[in-house]
Image (cartoon, rainbow, N blue to C red; front, side, top):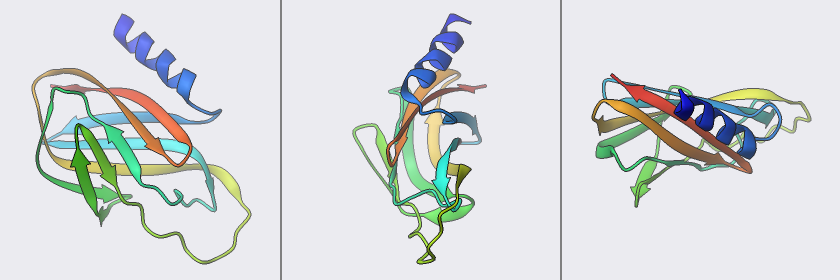
Length: 131
């Protein structure tokens, strides 16, 4: 319980108002859901950088961004996922949006893991449990 409270407080310390993150792990895929202020509902130029805990092993890595395949690379426990190029349409609407990033090809033992993520000027901390 203390870990969950500490993880939640840690995410508040890094996040801008309205920013929040959640993560889940199932079948070798980590799904990260980031909520933050976006222009026209677009996630921005990216990339999304995910700092994986040392207990996560990376196999044949593949990624999705909002359900579509995305280029991905990794080095020293950090995974970088390229975001799609923003549309050329000019828009001035700024609202809370949701970005879903899936990272497949991961392996983990049972336990609770904390991770960090960054996209544009937004930083997140969250945790997930492996059965």
